Length: 299
Length: 181
Image 1 (cartoon, each protein chain N blue to C red):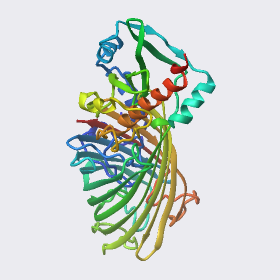
Image 2: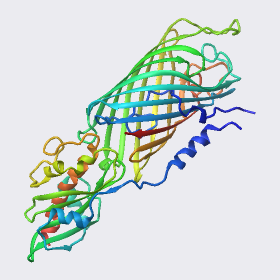
Image 3: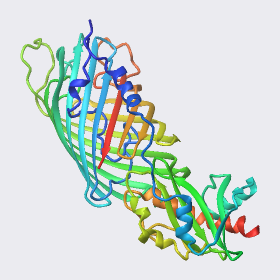
Image 4: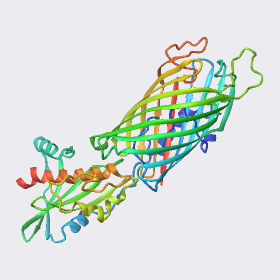
């Protein structure tokens, strides 16, 4: 019988996401960030759950969780701290340097992040909304394999947002770059010919995403998102690229909101694992399916 | 039996949805009429139904969409004389519509505005008399722009922008429709 990651046990946990990290305003989208700032003196608490599954062979399920608290320091500047967590169930697939062994655990804390956001232009006041986002993170678990890995990252994103139809339609786009230094921890008992380097690796990741959403009823928005990501690293050059796209549904209440997004991988490339049959996807560090639920509370 | 994460996640938003139900009505129409036209001895229902041509004319001059085909309007009179128009309007807030009312003098000045229903998370300062007073005396010659002649309300920029544009649109509606009655 297949064992799935249980969701209930990780409700209080943090989250580790494959995508650029979330920054809490009202998340109209699951993956794309808006440019709206949090007002001065206000606070926002968010809980994210991201389920990643299916690498094409073997069994692979992962649950990323994130607990985030954001504060509006001024009307233009906000800061957030985030605790990430990871649950994983992988078996029947080994990939040199990426998936060393079967692994299963319900949830464990995986990383921490501090983020800053500064708003230059307001989407409701200026011709376009524009914000700068910067995040510094340290992860001690590898989101892909569930193994110990020290990952230090700094990420910068430019966030753009525009309203149409008095704000009933929202268009948003992000462009960003992330630099990472990652070091795998040694693992005992691996096959002698299995590649598991424990020297530091440097990675550069570029992300471009866009989303559009429409308020079709009071409090309800429906839309779509598209997410492109590519990573280059020492030794291999372009390690991967992928395009994910899918629908998103958002409910915005006065004191809380929720967003549900399904973002499967549509196309991908770069490295493939031996015997990979889905040759139009990147399945080493990505999966075929991804679903995210975000819930936010405003104070 | 292990919880299957995807069906579980899909159930959560369904379970969480319980309708809106948090809108706060601050003033009734009657209360707003009394606040803006305390000197009127009668307010006569003068609701308008706009033709497509009128809606286009309003949109062109106001620079914003005339969303409603029907507009709730009352004619404020004192001793049988017109002293102004009382108009109830709705504009888009972040999640729901904002219901407000504007009083317009016969010569196209804003007499005052009142917020009737406000439903958003932030920005309840739109109800503050200090913010609403900024509209008093405005005409179509004024910019009606946030951080220019109307202060922006942080956390409710969309709401304050749409109310500002809405009041301007009502002045245009007066010019296009009401003054020709």
